[in-house]
Length: 83
Image (cartoon, rainbow, N blue to C red; front, side):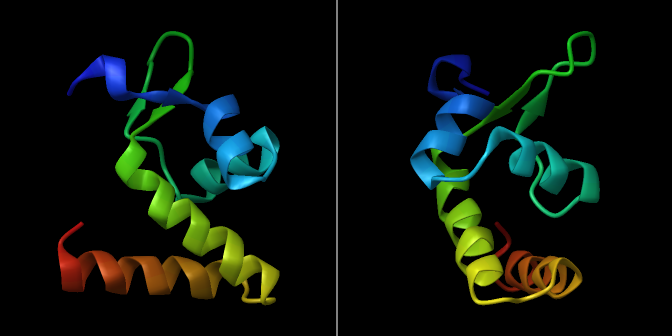
């Protein structure tokens, strides 16, 4: 993994216009997990490729879709596209 292309929680939150707390919550729920999580510090790092997925999560939440349904949608997408 190329570490220089990784983004921190704050960067992703700002780009996606959601809170850092929401990103952490999505990780805890297993819905949107970081590409890398430091085992010592717990810091989360995301790739640019993951932005598409967090935009999808954000938009589905805006439409009122429940998190368990979003998790199913993302799992289905991963199975179809092998993301």
